[in-house]
Image (cartoon, rainbow, N blue to C red; front, side):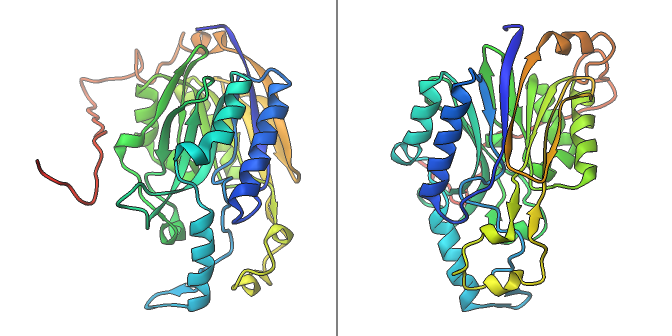
Length: 315
């Protein structure tokens, strides 16, 4: 493992429900980061193609509306597949700069399960190849109306010259056993994209860094109501919401819970930092959550990483 890495965290807004515009924006961000010799870049939760904050999709207990179904159709069509053609611009940009890029996407399910969307993290390697995808295990609250639940087969980590990269999405990071699964895989650069802009989220980022003795990259969108397209069928649902729907709060934290980059609020922007990876080893002097500070004689924990498809075809 090399001793340092240059990372970038992009606090940017989606072009809501416009897949091509989101891909184009992401490609430009990758190229801009490449000019700064960035090795690893993290982009927000569901950057492609948006986080539908404030919308009900016309769904209430016992009923759904036609207008909500039309807005969902639009969002579904703007969600990504993992096809070679659709991911090519992103993969080409990453390869052009030998950069590992991790992007939050709304993902259409694979063939045979195309109706369900997933809140996913797409991992693209410095060689331009897809290294894996993580599907959010437990969509939060009414996110469950939009996205299905992932399974243990997508608890993805990626080995790089800078160490093991992996992470969880938003409130998955409040699942202690999910965090433990990541620590057990040796993650030392931990990714935590989110849609949570509250002050309490900063405590979460700092706790994970201390607990995992890892660098933590927290990434959120900055998004305002005025960024939504006005022709959404249920646009009027937004009328009582504040203009600033997500104030951001992206940050970079070291293995001792100290900020490398303070939280960014109130604007789009990119945080860039050089990380001294020796800080990880220094932190293990007195704490290693899956090593000398663990009691396997007392606590037992197992992870089911088998795919769990809805339909199985026996040979």
